[in-house]
Length: 222
Image 1: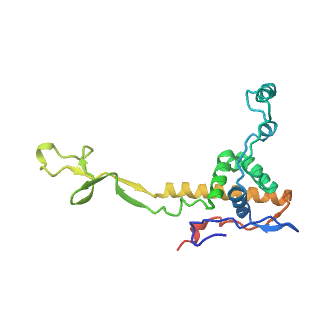
Image 2 (image 1 turned 90 degrees about the vertical axis):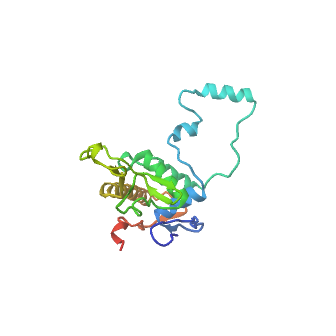
């Protein structure tokens, strides 16, 4: 399902079983539900099922349908597989301890793309100019007059003296820790979903295995 390295992309090849349940990893199940079945998150399942919306009563909805003289039919595509609906429901109901709605939206978007979080991969400490300047001779770091501590008096510096190149540091320890923490939060949410489906056993075409993405892939880098 996954390509080489850690810039992972997955094209869902998972199919629900007909004669029996197909063993599948939780990540592959998510990719199948959001990428193939195109399910969406619904944080108000009761409201969407009944047709009600906050601030709008059923009387108003029925009155508007009566004005149209017909029942509104969404149409456009077939309904997703029931297992995919269960997956979307479980993701929508992620507890706050696992990231809640924010993590649910993140998982759904990554599953549609078929890729794992990869912010941590490309983070190496670096120092670069804060701005660049294009010149006919090439591209140079932008410089400015230094007005901070230690500046020489104006009457003691030459025409080309007193300049500095402001820099920015990226990929430092704090940024790497933030990206790795985001990966661990995502991994923990997948573990929660895996345990949910393993305990409930309510999927009709799948059986969830213990297979998971690596917990700390940065430890395996050379």
